[in-house]
Length: 149
Image 1 (cartoon, rainbow, N blue to C red):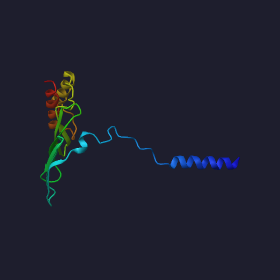
Image 2: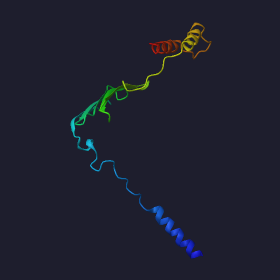
Image 3: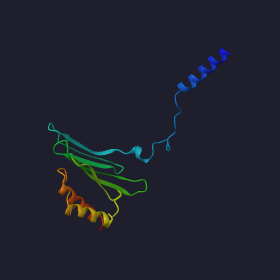
């Protein structure tokens, strides 16, 4: 009985240690993009952290970015989607985070009027709080008004 348990444990250990089966690719040749070549690639990286790069491939992928200080950057990239549409995105990355813009990105829905009214009431009667930022509130009200069209 004990010998059978040892043999069974050994078989389970061998099965667990076996390498996983390879999953075949959807296309054994790598698909239409596997033959893409780089048609442009330029980059400049300076000692002060500033940089600039651009690259483009033969299958329609393109990207470029630059930074004057190595901290704040802006750029864009584009590529063809599987349905043939061109996806393009421009961005800024700075102290306010990554801020992408593109026609394919979702947009926030219009802000309800009662929400804007409440914020305007707060602006008209600001709280007695040293951390209250009226300029930020004004910017948010303007941003939410812009969502209304």
